[in-house]
Length: 312
Image 1 (cartoon, rainbow, N blue to C red):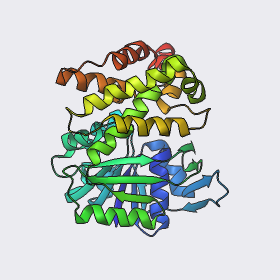
Image 2 (cartoon, rainbow, N blue to C red):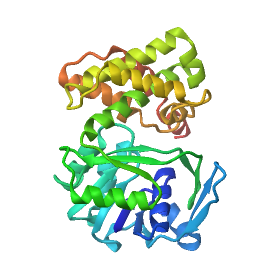
Image 3 (cartoon, rainbow, N blue to C red):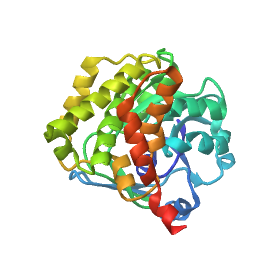
């Protein structure tokens, strides 16, 4: 397949590398700082689980999507709040039947794709991977089995979804097709917004927030808010999903923190608008009360990009 990958950070660079290694024609749209390192040295993947790393050269990397042209599929690996703007500048990748797979946290990326390039292109996606960019062109995969669940937003199983599942499987990604991807995305959204928001608010890792009865119950109640909200937003979550996500929360390593929590603690721009902020906005649109997430959002927004504001 001819696959475009938009974004060359820890997620985009990893999936671009493994798809290229599997023999697919992979083209990357990235910001300027990534271009020369990847053109000169390729994409290098290192691992933390004892498996040998590798280096691979993608078909191309550029800031200009016009140089790539239409792709069979596009993987969106930009920051959650940037999907619409970034894809609008990379619309040359989109042909009549091009599927666009978002790998962002949150539940707004599919609509942002539609807003950028029109109806009929957006898929839904849920990505599970722990990886980060060491420097441009070098990505470190911490360990474990990378997994992507993908599907059409209407629940149908199409040839383009099957083709993308095969391509990912060939790249040794655990890929699966969902007939209810909207619920799958909301389930992950419920987990990350709740434990990440409480962790950021308390400035404590998972081991601390889950072992204290007050913060643990706060995480669980925050999940329940999102579960109730999901039912008016097209998903189907209930108390059994809350229990499953609490089990996943309990399975995290004690020193784990959410990416939004780490960014806020460091004063970096975070995804708070697409996590806690999205809960608040969607709830307001549907007339649903979400007092926990409202408090989390209002308390933490001050920290979003604080260091950059100070430096200015």
